Image 1: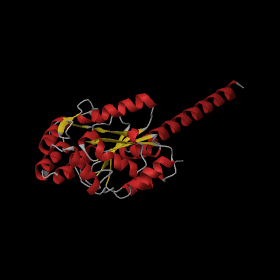
Image 2: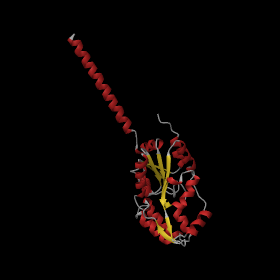
Image 3: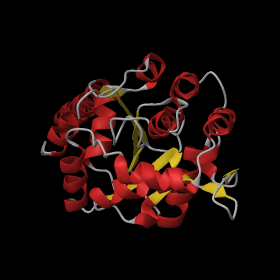
Image 4: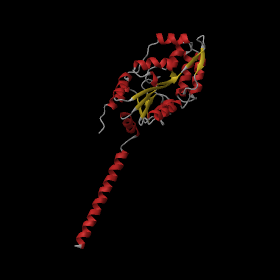
Length: 261
C-alpha cells in the first residue's frame, strides 16, 4: 500500500512538472514571436487615441514651405525645413529662422488659404473615419500653424479643440509680430509634452503617434507607440527609429480590420 502511494505521488509530481514546463515553454514561445512591429500593430488595433502629425503626413505638403513659396521665399525656407525635420537643429530655432524669412502678414495668410487647395494624403479620410467609428479619439499635433491646419481638421471632421499647433502673432496693422513661444509645439520635445498632458487629462492607455519627422519619433514615449509614415517623404533617420514604418495609409486601414482572437 505504501509503495502504491509513493508511485502515485511520484507520477503526480511528474505530471505537475510536465504541465509547468509546457506552460513555461508556451509562454516563452508567445513572447518570442511578438516582434516590435507586431507589438505596435497590436497597440494600433486597440488604441483609444491616435495623434497625427499634419505636414507631409495628413497632408501631402509642408505647409510652411508652401506659405513661403506663396510669399516668394520658397527655396530658403525649404532648406531649413529639411534640416529641421532631419533633427539637425532644435525645432524652435528652425521655426524662428523660417518665420523671420517669410514674415507673413494677415492678408497674405488669408489669401493663401483662399487660393491654395488642401492636398490630403490618399487614405487619410477613410482612416480617420474608421478610427472615429471605433470610438478612437483623433488629434492633430503639429509644428505647423493653427490657422493653416483648421481647414484640414474641418475636412476630416476633427474637432478644432483637438488641434495642437503653433499660433502666429500679428501687429494691429496686420504685419507679422512673431509666434507664441508658449505653445509646446513650438519647440523640440513639445509633441511629447502634448501627449503627456492628453494622457494625464483623459487617461488614454494606448496612445499612438503617427508622423514623418524627428519630432514625431521623439514623442514615443510618452506615446505608447510610434508609426513612421513615408507616403509623402522618406526620412531615413525616422525610418530607423520606427518599429513600424508604412508608406501607405491603406496598410493602417487594413490592420484595423484584422480581427484579434
